[in-house]
Structures are given as C-alpha cells and as structure tokens.
Image: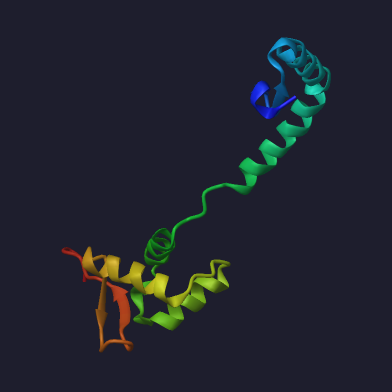
Amino acid sequence: MRDQEKIKVEVQIGPATVRVEAPPERLEEAVKQVVSAIKDVLPQISAEGLGQVQRGERARRRQPTCSELLRGLMEEGWFDTPRSLSEVVQELARRGYNYNSTAVSHSLLDLVRERSLSREGTPRRYVYFRSKREGED
C-alpha cells in the first residue's frame, strides 16, 4: 500500500502523544487500540509524569535578577562604602550568584541612571556607592 493511501493522525491523551498511520478503512480500529493501550498505562504515566512536573517546578523557581541582587546589597548597606566592579562581582559570587562583569556593569549603570547608586572615577575604574537621598546625611 502506498503512503498516499494512508491517513496520519496524532492522538494526545494526558502526557502521552501517539502518531497513528493507517489506511482509511482501518484508521478507526487503530485509534481505538491506541486509546485503549494508553488508558491501560495512563495511571503509570500520570504518576511518573506528575513527579517530573513537581521536580521541574522546583528546579524552575525564579532566580533573582542581577539588579534585584544589587538592590538587596544596597538595602543591607553594602554600598555605603564605595565598591569597584570587581568587588561587586566577587561579592555576588561569594553569595552564590555568578554573573559576568558585563552583566553586573549593565545593572550597576541602570541603578546609577535611576539615581539609586552614584559612581565616581573614570571608565574601567569607577567605584559605585549609595546615592544620598533628600533628608539623609
């Protein structure tokens, strides 16, 4: 029988997806057999699939962004002392967050632009520190 005379169908039941290829006169029977077979093993698939989903959700907990981590350092008073880019990268790494210096530099620049941090120095030699707000000494 040639491929042109066969019908291709994809059946999805729960987490299982099956492709069925059969001639038109046998397609209904083939789909019924596939559905029956999937239903027989579905409790096993569901239990295994559920465990994978739960593990996957735990693994996908949202990690804080570089900017969020830098804001946390600001709140702790870590930027009360002027800090170089390399010091910031090292502190994040010490806390278990390994960002390259380019990413940290961009986040620091964003904080400077919104005036949460200030910087002094020359390019490649900047130090970053907490901006003085109105009412602060």
